[in-house]
Image 1 (cartoon, one colour):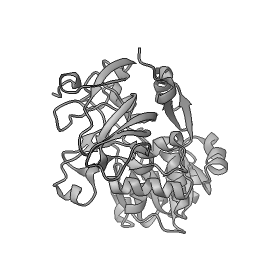
Image 2 (image 1 turned 120 degrees about the horizontal axis):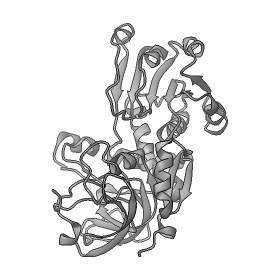
Image 3 (image 1 turned 180 degrees about the vertical axis):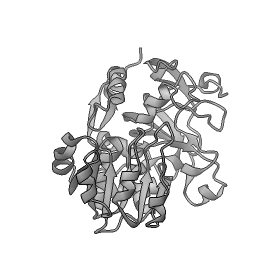
Image 4 (image 1 turned 135 degrees about the vertical axis):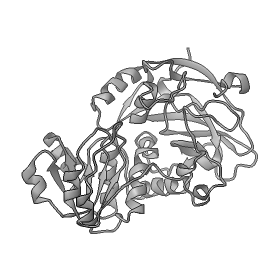
Length: 360
């Protein structure tokens, strides 16, 4: 059980927290730690709303600890640095994603894969090294070890960039690891939500031919005209799916609802890869014969390490990749959660923390 920050920490902070599994967020006074020698403190300007936040505030995955301050798509400006900080200075534009700590001694950490460290510390709803509960970005400021900050290039708008710190790295990392980052490959993206729309943008920037696969025919124009996809498949249309059989080198499946995998496996070429980055809360049925009959692979991927997250942000800046967002004031956040549950957002809510979070 994490200790309350008020018992240990001296620096006053203010944000919005869920107090129980109703998930209702309301103003919350708490504390953050003093700036340590290797810490960076920054004023939070914007924070994206990830679907994980919705699951966590309602304890849908279990393990939620209340009061819970969500938010792991956090951007802002440095206000203070510790004596041993080397990478950042006051006024730098920075971001924090899903991680604020790890063991730094395991094989994963040694290979810049802090995201797979068995002792990784999540940005919120986790227990920090000092025994206190971590609080996320729906708040006025944050302090983190410099290792867990990324530098935001000046040409990336901070509000549009915030969702890349979770959604961006979630799609960038598997595209790189599974070698779907080569020009000329045919990549499918299942689902056109917060993850899917940035998946399309990154895959296109790598030079792929991109097909969006969706249950919603009304998203075709959006996918092709606005996001730059090359083609669109309605997954419920057997004729369309049949015509596309065996044409794709890889598929990024961003859907978090239970859905059939068999039609997707059929779209893959031999040696094709179906990579799961959504998180359905119930097991999916996996037919094995289609894997055997083409040496096909089903894999998963979860965010990325800090080195790769910085690479992703720099790549986004170079290729002008941002998330499509709806900026909201903090006091709209409960309505935003209701809309998010109904997928009523294009494609990511971002809270304007700096201009709308006022301490009571």
